[in-house]
Image (cartoon, rainbow, N blue to C red):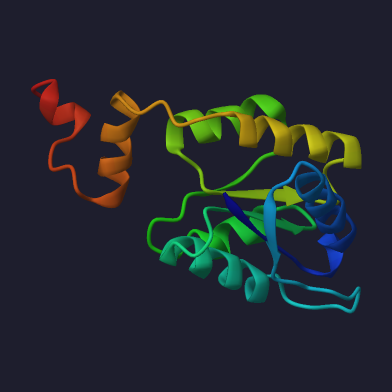
Length: 154
């Protein structure tokens, strides 16, 4: 697995911590910046990581900004990207299990370092369950022609 990482100035310390965590576990990491604490704009890095995941050159991505919210919005514009901003382990696991989230967005001003590591580990340890959740992914992609209301006869 190849993991892409990106952050703005608010997330650089977390990004470095998370990159070390994955590299220490033997994973391949592509760090797409930023590399300084100078103020910068989060969409630059969200776009880099999301484009690479969307094109398949990276398997999964992790983005860090102050809240994780802006990164999730910016990254989700790309085809096939399901970016989620989460701050707890349960949501991280469910994001992978039920929506096959392929980009995790974290808030450096929301989480402590220990919590960020736990959320990352929870997200990485979960796998997409498929089944009814695959049908829901198809609905989100626009490839499913029915709706739950139509199926119920409403």
